[in-house]
Length: 315
Image (tube, rainbow, N blue to C red; front, side):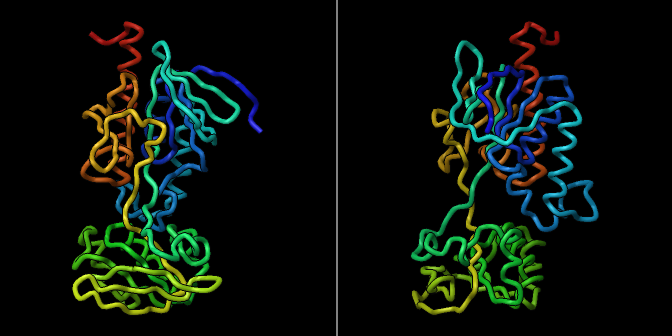
């Protein structure tokens, strides 16, 4: 168990996904005393990507967790400290940020939060009941449990299409259920699904109930045009219907209508010295490459903020 301690840093980063790790790398390399806190093993959604194929300069594709492991090692090589710890509160007192975890307290001049977003749920009967027993939000982690079985993927964005393609390499057949008449995923990603003989797409359809006994055995589908209901046997339901930003630590910040934190182009929030980066931030395009860009910009802004505090800004 972590002993009670109090340590001072120039910068604390909350979240060890691509945005947080990019921020840590740039900050540590700029000689800022940098701490990264993440409640899990780090990596965020990127750690679950089967093949990372669209990050510039990374070719041939690598698995997400491998790429994240390299990012961690790179940040640590520049001096960043990465700790697995759940942050319980963040306050700002006398110009310094106070970050508390279970058993520890840290202070810093600046703070970058890159807490990302978590998967949204369908909110239908059976979803909660069968979570971990056929209902999943992580195909890379849980897909191998359903080798040579029929599964359902719910969603129509990049994540849903990517995960459906991955599951098709393991499962007998994949049925993608999407409420709209066409995918919202990027064209190349969507086309891989549409041309895959092991994937069937049910457009204009909703999963309105998940059924089973001790584990998932079928889903109820409702046609959004006709209202007709049908049943589809399946061993698992993988749900990818969007994300919810993780902003509970910063409930007083300005957010957009969807709950994402509003920043300026320098990643600055409405609180001086507090910067946001990655999927938690309000923006039009969420990809790993944009998350890394956010992190680098946030780090640069934090460096400038510290120089202002110390009257060391460039003239």
